[in-house]
Amino acid sequence: MADTDVDVVVLGAGLSGLETALTLEDNGLKVRVLEGRQRVGGRLYTLTQVPGRPEVGGNTVSAAYGRVIAAGKRYGVELVDVAPRYAAFPDRQALFVGGEHIPLEKWPTHPRNPFEGEFRALPPAAWGRSVLRARREFSDLAGWHDTANARYDRSVHDFLRAQGASDRAIALGYETNMPYGTESAHDVSVLQLAFVDHWQSINRRGASAGERFVGVFRGGNQNLPIAMSQRLRGDLLMGRRAAAVEQDADGVTVRCSDGSRHRARAVVCSIPFPVLRDVALDPLPPAAQWSAIQTLGAKPITQFHLVPKRPFWESDGLSPAFWTDGIAGSVLANRDGPDLKQVTSLTVWCSARNARHLDRFPRADAARMVVTEIERLRPAARGALEVAAVHSWEQDPFAGGTWAIFRPGQVAAFAAVMAQPHGRMFFCGEHTAIAARGMEAALESAERVSLEVLQRLA
Image 1 (cartoon, rainbow, N blue to C red):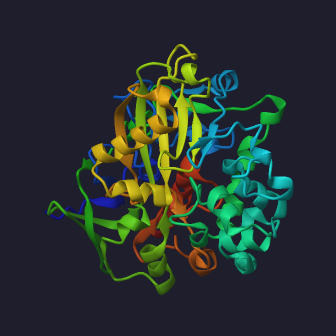
Image 2 (cartoon, rainbow, N blue to C red):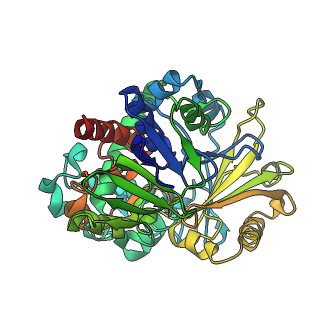
Image 3 (cartoon, rainbow, N blue to C red):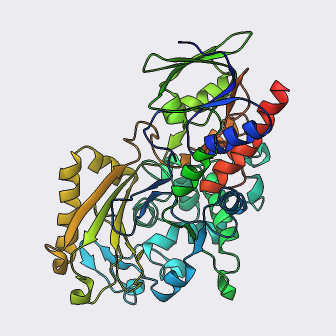
């Protein structure tokens, strides 16, 4: 039945949606939050069933995450600095290329190394961003979305080729375990990548002076949105997936797939654009904003969380973490227990085309393929790995991928307008932020959208 006694309906109970709802409540509005999942947190997701409680999304907080740090204090969730753990056990990744283990000291002169000049000594995982940092074409990184920088809104591939990189170098050094992009270096704007590197440089400040901060919330980062949800005074309804948003002169009606209807003076949409595409909007947004909703990408990531039955890396003498150009992707070691010497789990990060390839198979088959590949590369691991969890962000019906990806031309086309209010409909979420990334971006967007709603409903 339609409900007409709330001021605002918020779609999505991730960080941005919850923070928006709490801010609006603090300013006297009656708010209802609708969440399609049966959990809060959105892309903040802690695997409580896996030893060490590893994160599937939203791994760490750095010193530049001022809003996130403040939120932890405000909602009573303790933030723990785990930088000493990383310093004591850096677990530098071993390198496997073409099925061959290549010691890092031999990589600069190895025949499989496609890089040239000053960049030849870099491992593949560091090559792409190092070239960007050294050969960057513009300096206004904080204004990456500004139309004045539109001439730089071209593909990462074209940028790297202009620096003299070969297609073979781009394939290994950027498109393998790709940090930003959906399929290849052709489908991400160098403007976005330059800003991401700028944001990460802000987060690295102080590390060289021994002041590095790596924060995690005690018991798992999902405890932050859980604590936020417990502060809500209005309804938090789970299992309510929005199917339609209909505006009229007096308000907004949200229709959900369970048949429920929710009426309010305004609606705040925090759900990612790949998910919003399946929601019927009436009336449609302006052309540029509608184009953003229909076409903005999100990075595919599929994770496999493995629990080692024995420390097989002690047998082959390599780091438990490793990087490969095969389907095993990038493997990171987690030391999340009281004994920092113990690896509690391994996280296999499969990205872009690699993730999409594995997503074609049933999860059990995909996990078997990954474990088999690890055992082929590292025979000492045979029989030593137990699959504890698998999660595909692109196949997640409430995410459609991880962080937003701007294709070449999209920054200039709609970065400045995609989050503008559309009548009584307002937008927030990581994809709408312009000054931060990750968890901090989610809270940045909540600040903006809360002001927009309050100004409209005042």
